[in-house]
Length: 318
Ligand code: GAR
Figure 1 (cartoon, rainbow, N blue to C red):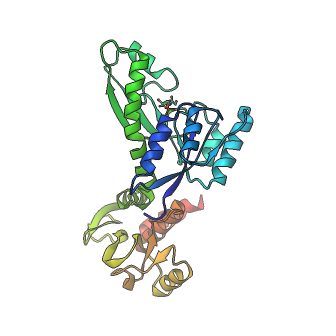
Figure 2: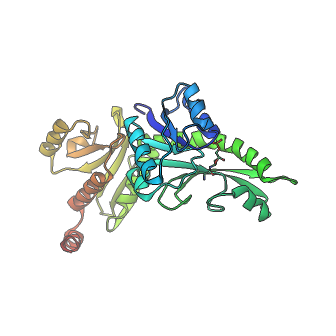
Figure 3: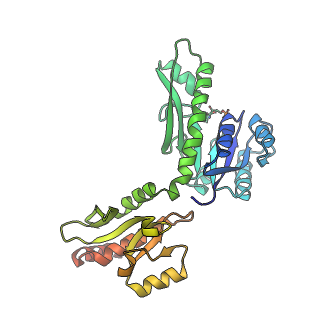
């Protein structure tokens, strides 16, 4: 893992989740740091607490919705944040704000999603007679409280519970899961299991592709006994420093030229390099997955039988 991921936190209230994220960030080994705390209420407890803790804060004046989100966006970008964690931020994010941070906003919500999106979650759980309440951390998408779940914690409903009592216990559970989920999420781009799963999703989409281990490394090949390999994963293999996708170039001339021109993107992998297979470095922050997909396709074409590549070429014409 290289530098710590830079996270901005947005709050509207007391900011206990913000505090939990912040204190976790100061423990050894935490992969993120908090570079800004802001929100829609300049005088809320969360912003005061962040300030007392020496975290940069952006206290915005009272703004209309049309002004608020561009102002938040500007402050967050000026702080150099790469991720946004919503921590009791009680405003619905406009779609253009979300799309500007696609897959980089996390939220914590006080229910076991998909149950009870929106407000008054504890009242609704009690009214429904649920035996379990809880909290969820999810990736923010344009639809409210709806993105992919990253973590959940269940909290038992007790006899005589009120919404306030339940909320207080759920909050304790929230503080346990948010920093863990955030830490795991920002570490994904460097995690070889996660990278392998994403490469696998792309590779297996190629016609007649199948997954097969080769010399202990995950690989993908054309189906059938004589089907050739077109991609491998190499996880810090034979002294390589990186997690690599190994794919086929036209030969050593191209391989050496690419490695020389873009050493941050390509390397000559141990073992496979001699045969003209190049290593595409996956564990880097600015990885472009379309570029990865392009190499997988190219490598597949290089080994696929003409019967299949002809079909691909026809499909490309449309
Ligand atoms: C938390 O319970 C959080 O889950 C909830 O607001 C509370 C904020 O507390 N968030 C939402 O309801 C978002 N829809 P905090 O300010 O002490 O972290």
